Amino acid sequence: MTERVLVEIAGCRVVKCSSCHADIIFAPHRGSLMPIDAETHPAGNLAVIDGTYVIVRECNHPEMFPGGLRRSHFATCPAAAKHRKRA
Image (cartoon, rainbow, N blue to C red; front, side):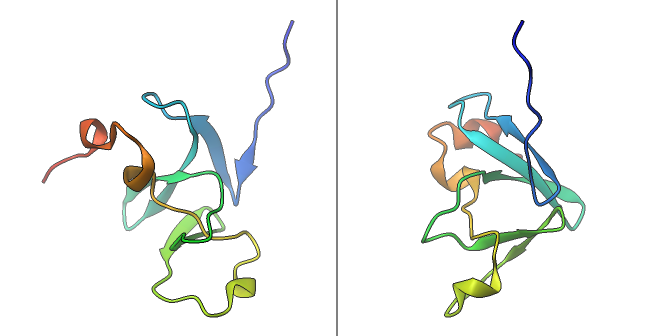
């Protein structure tokens, strides 16, 4: 029997994208959930802090974010348009 390991990043559970199967997290911000890549990225502009994401406009000091910066999964998933909610 395989043991299931629960992985969390900054208080957010890591799950698989239902389309591309990449590891992602859903972090809340202002009442909605944003899919965010679980992997950090040098061009990332999202920091996940205590289970909530913040947008980082400029980052001249990446050491300010010890958890690293990540990208929105809407920017990296080939099937992102299928998952976006339109207003």
